[in-house]
Length: 261
Image 1 (cartoon, rainbow, N blue to C red):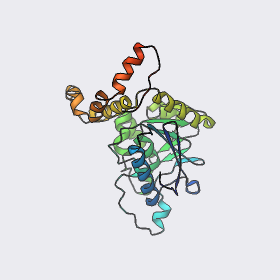
Image 2: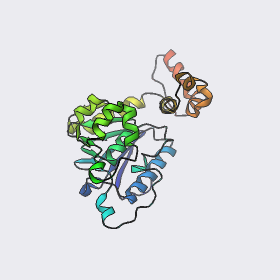
Image 3: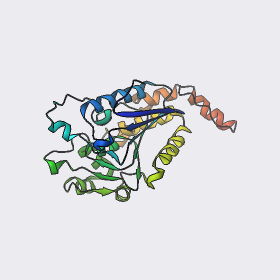
Image 4: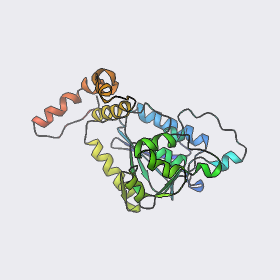
């Protein structure tokens, strides 16, 4: 991995842990940080030895979103084709990403979490899309993903009021997978990552790809038609060594030795 300035990286046991590291700005992201994180997730996608990613924040915030102070200082914002943290406008990442939300997740920070596949939240986490309070709107996926995840009425209840939502309420609404005591957030995120790693990495990718792509179809029947040919990740799984190894290990009553190919 390339050297990073705005995040810390750890690679261990097929897991990449990305810690946004701008605590003095509550991990708010300016374009240089977003572009750096985009490179990090490019490398995650391409590295055959990395099967699960966890993203979290340093200090008391996950991410306060867009660094408005940086913008107000007169800096010109360049295009960011992959969005906040290189994730909110990335639609081809078939490897799983877990958001370990350790504190404030506001605006773009909440949109980063929504772009992840699972949200494990500290009991100190707080979520909001407060953009309307400063004359903006959550255009990095918040207005699109939140209604798809929790339904339009519940989403509107957050979006039109810009109110703060606790981790516990987030779990009740359905966008948080689970809430854990603050000091256990990374331990639990790693436990969930380990549960994912017990599965075939190609099966995980095929499953993620099929779930999200199937949402593009209006018809359930159309979404299920020709899955082995329409979904590239499914085709890769079916043609892999792991596709043979899984049933073989089951028959031999042993743990499978996944190779990811």
